[in-house]
Length: 253
Image (cartoon, rainbow, N blue to C red; front, side, top):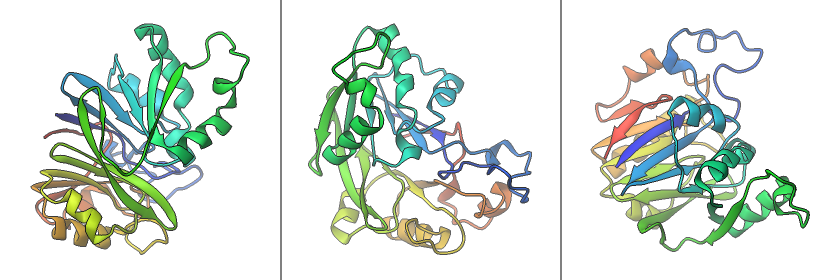
C-alpha cells in the first residue's frame, strides 16, 4: 500500500490568514499545511479519506487521475467542503462516486450540498452513490476497512485501519477496546494539534504517549496547527519512531 498525506493542517490551514508568527512566515515547505486528508493506493484501487476545502489543489498536486471511493471520518467542513470537485472524476470515469460515511455524516452532506440531492438534477452536478457505514468492518472494492471509534470532544468520529495502516484524525479520546483494533499496525497517522492541551484534539505529548502505548513501527503526526512550532525544530524532540507528517509525504506500508 502507498499512503500519501494530501494535507496535514488543522481547520484553518498553515499559514493562518492574518497571522505573522514564526511558523506562518516560515519558508520551509513542510510548514505549509493544507486541510487534512489522505490518499490510499491499495490493491490497484485509489481511495481518499476526507475531501476538505483544498481537495482540488491536493489531487492536482499529486496527479491523482482516478478515484474509486471517498470515505469520511466525520461531518466538519474542513473534511467535507471539497465534495463538489469530485465532478471531474464523474466526467472522466463515467460513473457515480461512491461515498462512505456514517448515516449522520451523509445526512449532513445532503443538507450542505442540497443541489446534489435535489429532485431537479442540474446538468454537471456531482453524481454520487451513498454507502452508510457503522462501526462494523466493511469493504470498498474488496479492500477491508476496520472503523476505529474515537471522540472529538463529544462528537463521535471514525478513524480507519486498512491492513497494517491506521489513520486517526480529529480525536482526543480513544477507548481501550478501540485501541486493540489499532494494535499491530505497522504505520499509524495520528492527530497532534499543538503543544498545549486542547478540548477536542490530542496535544503533542498526548499523541506521543498514545503512540508509545500502541508501538507501531512508524508513526506520523497530522492535523497540525501553527501553534505546534516549526517542523524542523519539533521533529528533533520526537521519539525515533515518530515523525511529523507534511503535505505530500508518501508512506509505503
